[in-house]
Amino acid sequence: MSKHGGTFLSGVLTLFLGAAQPALAETIQVNVRLVREDGSPLANTAVRVVIGSEKAARSPDAGKRLTTDADGRLRYQVEAPIKQRRIKLDSFFARHDSQLVEVGLELELLGRRALYWVEIDLVKAGPLAGMHVFLPGRSGQFDLPLRFNDKSHSWSFPDQPDGMQLTGMGVRLLEHHMKISPSGVWMVTLKMEKQQFTVR
Image 1: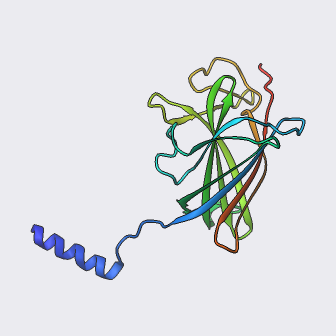
Image 2: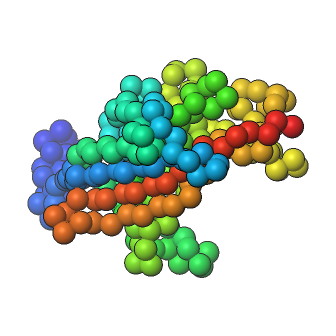
Image 3: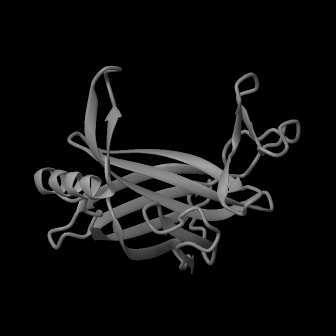
């Protein structure tokens, strides 16, 4: 096919199928409260917050660096797209439409920086959440997942598989909420507990 023929065909497909449109940015507001294991607020703690649909979200410079207040709270608001995906819930074969917001929180993990990556799917039944932990790889991007050891049911650093065994990921997600406000703002609320480690 000639160059001009290919251009014509592309134009026809665009006419009938419609041009691909980038996802529109929405206002996303994240409200986080960090507490210790005894429930007391984790005040004056440095945290970097990023939304997963921001540019280069796994980069160490993405998002914004904030400090929790006296009650362990912080707020981050940004304009970013809402992701769409289909997920499995109660049936292996059935998939459900979901609107996804990913929130990254960079915190200290035994002297190292770790990105706690919270995925919140808004489905008809309500918001569902899961969390992963990533450490910086060779490129500096947070793309190395904390390693889970099946035999000992413990965690270890990905670059130290035979090193210390951790009884948790360092942070527990206690509460999660997500809704759209009357003004159209995506409101995400997280309560997270910073754990004290037991080393095996």
